[in-house]
Length: 87
Image 1 (cartoon, rainbow, N blue to C red):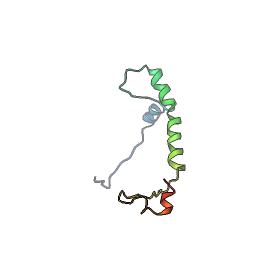
Image 2 (spheres, rainbow, N blue to C red; image 1 turned 45 degrees about the vertical axis):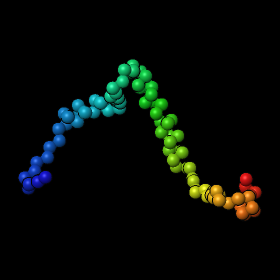
Image 3 (tube, rainbow, N blue to C red; image 1 turned 180 degrees about the horizontal axis):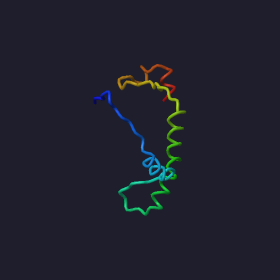
Image 4 (cartoon, helix red, strand yellow; image 1 turned 120 degrees about the horizontal axis):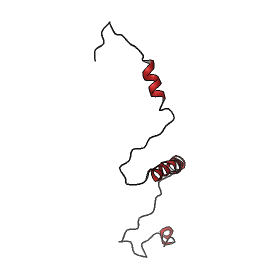
């Protein structure tokens, strides 16, 4: 991109006015065969799913859990007492 010294910028009030006509309107483009009312209702309820995802993602704290791995070659007589009590 190259900008020269003789750049002229102009703002078209006509285009701004024309663009302002669509302010506040929503549009949905979909490739389903659903009626427009159903598509609108599904998007209207989407915030519930997004909020649940955010809550789960944000407040869930996890730590690793370590379980003792019992080797198969340990028999009942060779197993330590603290592990025997778990079974």
